[in-house]
Image (tube, rainbow, N blue to C red; front, side):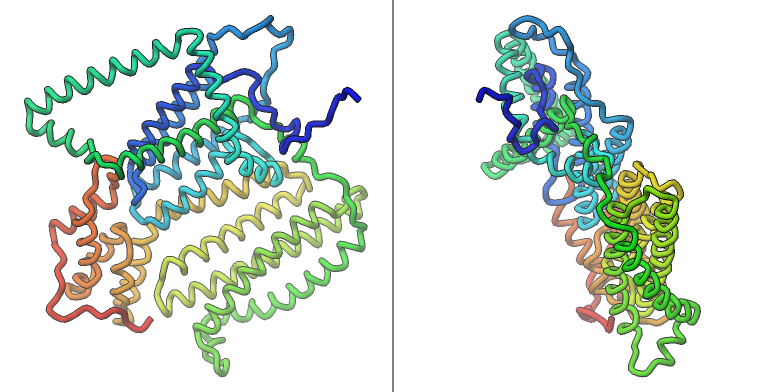
Length: 509
């Protein structure tokens, strides 16, 4: 009649949250970092402002975690101190990955690339503050992150109330007010005394209007929710250890071995055909009636990409449900799943071969670069699965799979994909004398160094839209980007102009 009652909340006892309100240091550090984000983040394009925001956020989380709470708790002190669960050393790696992903916007101007990095940074940031080792634990951590921001609102509000009672809030507000007043007074004096300094101040401070103020308020609220949620999770990480166990095995030996053995035989037949095609290069296309490069490469690639993705799900289900109590069970798992993974690697190679052949014939595009990268990442995943099959126990595997994806994305950013696309298409143009200048003109300023190799007429057609966009959208300190700066320098040395002959919209692709 009087309990104890079970916890019927969404997360139960797995995520109870901090036992005390936020410390004054945590509250003000989160608000200060949110203010930096509101002033720094450029929503229209990639720029250094994203990296500045990341630095401010990391500093705020360090302060929130390291600075002790000096507010005396109400009531008697507890006899046993409560300690939140530790996240382990992996959080440092995820934090570094988040910083590196957000730093891409400082060096690369391709919007599609930075959007991928930003989305991945949200995942790695959630893993940095919430943890998670197994696939279920990592998925739960990523799912918890959006809710953490809303749960942090009363936590931070209670912290501000406690600091007000202690007088800390008034002292901090006075410190901030005096600092702002001094900067404004002396900054105005310096700006009126020197024209060069006044130009710097004018470039740093945007034109104030209703739209700018609304944008600042919006970014402040969103950043405060994200950083507040991160501080909330760091103060009391959820307990995800119960999600790491594999659970009971509910499938008998023959119930999983027979279907997967048949699947291995089917894969073997397909791989046998593919090996002939792989070693035959383009001869297979030339000798097959009514088969073009487009039919062979473009059509078959997508089917093989789906096959490798579905096979990964099959392997995950088999590892989750197949019994491994006896030596026979363990041998079957190693043989059948290992064979399936090895055959999948050959299919990955076949898919990459098809797309490489298609790109050689019809040119490279962003999609023809990005999707094979995903396929190559799946190949790395299969290699990791083969390594995990040696001991049949690999708690590191889920983290390693995500880390491989992060490294692949960072490697793509280092390779400068838009410039790589332009360079490969220009090399192909030197051999075939066919090039799509319209598509090249849609690339980001990252591609300007490679586009300078084009003949004068084609160079003007490809670079003029990029040059006009750079001229119409000058960078300030928030949107500073090394790639755009380099492109402006190259175009200033050798300007691009429309030729007297109208540029074609497209060539045969």
